[in-house]
Amino acid sequence: GENVEQHPSTLSVQEGDSAVIKCTYSDSASNYFPWYKQELGKRPQLIIDIRSNVGEKKDQRIAVTLNKTAKHFSLHITETQPEDSAVYFCAASIGAGKSTFGDGTTLTVKP
Amino acid sequence: GAGVSQSPSNKVTEKGKDVELRCDPISGHTALYWYRQSLGQGLEFLIYFQGNSAPDKSGLPSDRFSAERTGGSVSTLTIQRTQQEDSAVYLCASSLRGLAGGRNEQFFGPGTRLTVL
Image (tube, rainbow over all chains, first blue to last red; front, side):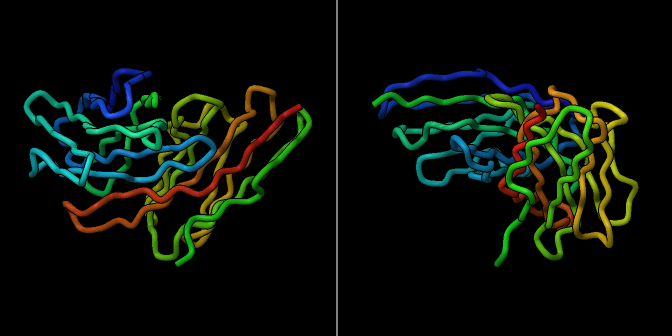
């Protein structure tokens, strides 16, 4: 089955700096890659996603890039703010099939 | 509209007792997942239901764990003879199975916090 690895497990940045979280996947058939944000004590929520027919997608301060050849995708957060502090999870799936999650990255943005 | 709901929100039980956790997915969502999340940890996949297909039970940690989904809607996760290591937050999520290439966003419920004494 699919295996998703996520790095780093923890990340600390200064407010205003950029943060990058990387994930690799094993199944070349995977074609849907969402990112979820989980704030402390809350449920995970989708923040951005990308399909395999697209190399990059941006939404204000967040962007996701996908390299199908290398089977990795990354989340980029620019101009980080304290409210970006949370746990971020990547995932991969084949179409509407079962999603496999990474182990999560705890991002801390220091004011 | 209504999101995914779970009940109870908190459950405290004694070691050896059985517990049932309930999940009400978003109406019309054909896919339903159960995850377990220990404090500060990631999402541990337990079981996946998709329409009328046989569920993917590959994540269930032992035969003490089982789950049902009746009528393609409500799901119940049952843990028999609970152990202290079962203490965690149990999250349910549902998604709408769309056309190939469509979004496969999972909508999570608020979770049930299980404490086994």
